[in-house]
Structure formats: structure tokens, C-alpha cells
Amino acid sequence: MASDVVTLRDGAWTSRWVPSVGMVGVSLFGAGRELLGQLGGLDAYAARGSSFGIPLLHPWANRLSGFAYAAAGRDVVLDAATKRLHVDDHGLPIHGVLAAYKGWEVREVGAQTLVAELDFGADPELLGAFPFPHRLTLEIEQTARRLSVATTLTPTSDQPVPVSFGFHPYLTLPGVPRERLVLRAPAMTRILTDGRGIPTGERASVAARRGAIGDTELDDHFCDLGPAPEFTLAGGGHELTMRFLEGYTHLQLFTPPGSPAVAIEPMTAPTDALRSGDGLRLVTEPFRAVFELDLVEAA
Image (cartoon, rainbow, N blue to C red; front, side):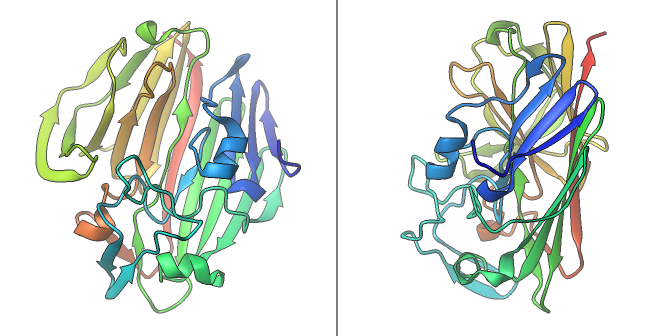
């Protein structure tokens, strides 16, 4: 474990964050249970960008369909050789360039709150991949029952900034086997994707879901999430709920094969938005996105 772990605690809830390793959330402990899927753990995340816990995906969530994009009047070619860029099994750029990034500065720490900032525009390597100067601020609050994560993107030049970031929380209810882990989600629109996970332009309405995951393997992309989106894992007498409170318009649901963890991923734009332009917002004022997690006794 890194030496700069910040622990937030209130009542039976504890969360831990590591500013020097991308501000990743490494633990969320409540009701005597670790609620984050650890997968390869912090060492693998630091070395290879292997997702676990609660990592920030910026400046794009999910993947791009190629190594060049045009946005906000800028033509950008990504350098496949840069150490900050990671690729998926199909060789596509995935999850942005901030995995395990060391440049975060802690601005405030309290028993229940953590505020950290990153000046994206101060690093030429970051600007080479995303030439839109801005500052990121993460405000994390741990209360006696819920965790809140607020992200603010503030442009720091006259250049509009495309917004397509997200998070990749891996959630679990230990002791609840996959076949008995219930996933509840509202009626939404599924964005159909090709074999690489890139949107095809086709969409399909899906009904509300309330059932055990069982042997279902999910890697699905959604929009039209409703006015108050929330997604719940239930089992073992508890319900762990993810709520999108502000700024998030898209969702990826992913179940790692053979694992009881579920990734419920808030996204501010659809997959490949930097290349397609679909659903991509350009901002000149601060942009804020907020999600929260809470754990309650099941009804």
C-alpha cells in the first residue's frame, strides 16, 4: 500500500483513497464488509492501469475507436508509444491517460472529507493527448451511511473543453455468490456496440431489471437513464445503491467473468464521443458531476 493513503471514516463506514496513485479509491468498508472489488489490487493498477476499486477515467471513459480525434476545433493524434496510454484487447485506447497519475495535490483533508486537485494543463504529456487546459477537482465526502464523489472540471484557458470522463467502480457484496447477487436497474436505452465495444448507431429499449445476475455476462452501454438514475446490488440482507446525482448521462454495466463484482460505471458522454461527437459536451465554465453510494439493510 502507498504511504499517502487518506482514510475517511464516519460511523460504520470507512473509505480509503491514494492521491499519489491517481486518486484511486482502494477501499469502501461498511457493515463489516469490503464493498469494492479488488481484482488485481493497487500494485497492478499502479504498474499497468489494471482497473480496480474506484478509478477515474479521464479525459475519456471506456474506449476510442482509433488513435485520432477532432473536437472543439482541434485535431489530435494520440501517440501509441506514450506510457500514459493504455490499450484494450483490440489495441484501442482505453480509459484516458490518468491511471495511477502522480500529479494530484491534496487541498483539504478532514475526518469525513477529502479535496484534491489536478492541473491538467501543467503537464505537456497530458496536453499532447488532450490539448484542452483545465483543472480537475475531486471532492469526496464520507458520511455515516453513504459516500459522495463530486468531480469538477474547470477550463483554465479560452479553449472549450470536451467532457467525456467517467469512473469505473467495481462493487460487490462479499459472501453473496454471483448466482444470488441481484442487480436492479431502471428502464433504459441500450446503445448497441460492435465486437470491439464501439457504438454502431443502433439503439434498443430495455425494460427495468430486477433479478439475479447468475451466469449472465454484462458489458453493455446505456443512455436515457431517467430523471433520478439509481442502480442497486442486493443480497445477504443488504442493498448497495449507486445514484447519479448530477452530470452523468451514460452508463456501462460490466460483470468480470467468474467474479461476484459488478462495475456500475457513470459516464458523462457515450463511448467514443471524442471521435464520433455524439453526446459530447463542450464547456467554457466549470462542469460538475456527482455520484453517491449507499448501503442499507434490505427491505
